[in-house]
Image 1 (spheres, rainbow, N blue to C red):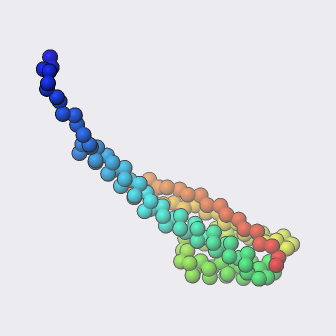
Image 2: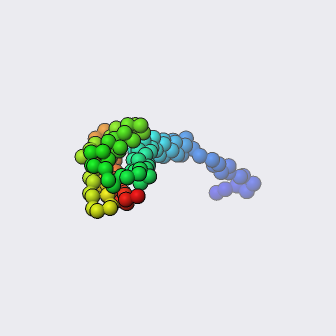
Image 3: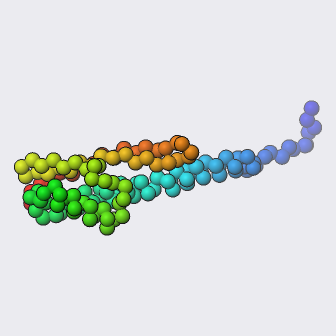
Length: 128
């Protein structure tokens, strides 16, 4: 039986285990952000490179080799090293040149666990 007048102190705040769980969740998402950020930045840079080809004058009259050289130079300047010529496909039709980019980013996560990001991008370049 409880005596009248005796008040039991209620627990307030986190316990040590609670703080460890919160810290573990925070560290997990921080680690995930650190390993995914370069892939996201690389994707943005690659999209910017392809979109910049729209501003190139006379792009549809150039040969595939000349266009690849333009792409390669832009990748060199922007330090994109993960793409090769095999990741690009160029299709010419009259006054429209379509460039397709398709590749997979395989990012090591932990041990033998990887994060796979599939990338697909296409740009239509119209004769200007």
